[in-house]
Image (cartoon, rainbow, N blue to C red; front, side, top):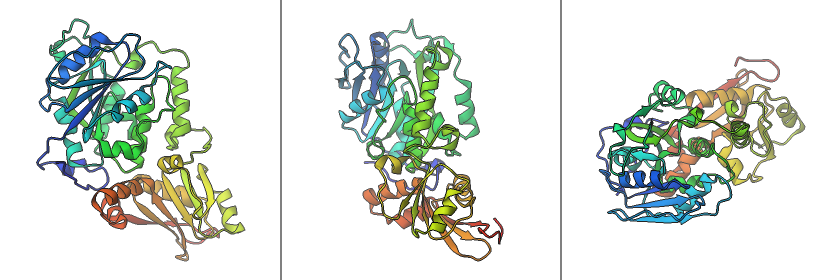
Length: 407
């Protein structure tokens, strides 16, 4: 039986001291032509302090059949055709085969320590919004035999940028809209309910990299609580990808995919918004003056539609905010409100003319809507109560189009 705790913002520290249930865990191991490494990982998963309910090997089209061997934890294999590097599709296929209430994702070349599953799933078992990432360390495991302690192998350097990101954010306690970059799918856990709510990994990612950042971005944008568990250690066989030879253009292709699908400004950079804008603007009042004011808005990554005209599911998952406009907006209004959203992790923002007090627009965080939607479905909590308790409401005072008032 899982525990459902609603925490505000990203305050996973408020889970401390609560009794931790022992969830039914399914582990999905993505694999491609790595029989030696897979044997190490499966042996380690069979020795966990919290034994998994099952292990599913998600094979991305290996040339030889996967032979998982026997052990106390049942192992099944789901295989997809080799059509290039399709880790996102493989993980989705593996997750679809599972029965557990909590999912753990591992790579076949990443060997967990005995307490890995228990430590990684602890916050997930307490809070349905948690997306937890473990600590991936690196070692030369070439001489390791199944069942050996990976910590005894020669250690290799870990990526500095990742360690620095966890240190600066207090293990993601102080995460913000860019912290999805510190979530890696090689050591990942969440509830099945959250995974399904997000729609799983995006199978448009073909080729190495990006699908984990994309999942983590959509999770944050849907109200997830990001957690780094430094005590959930798994050892990657070999150096980090950044230390290996990368095919020319591969990182550029990954960056282009992320810019297309993730409208967060630091990720999108100067790329055009296309069909997936950052802000979805709905016209509560559709006049020439309102439209003209939006044409000169300083926040340019937006799309405009009449009120109640539907958006696509992809747009609703990826835009950071929806804005309903009631009156002419000064050019900086949406940009000012988005800065307030970023700085306070606010759920709802009323945009008000600082001089006249006129109610100009209402901005709603997609992050708040996502958390409220899940809690309304699972616990019956009213949407407004979840938004207020988890994110709160605030007002953004903007300088009017005529120059009156103060920002």
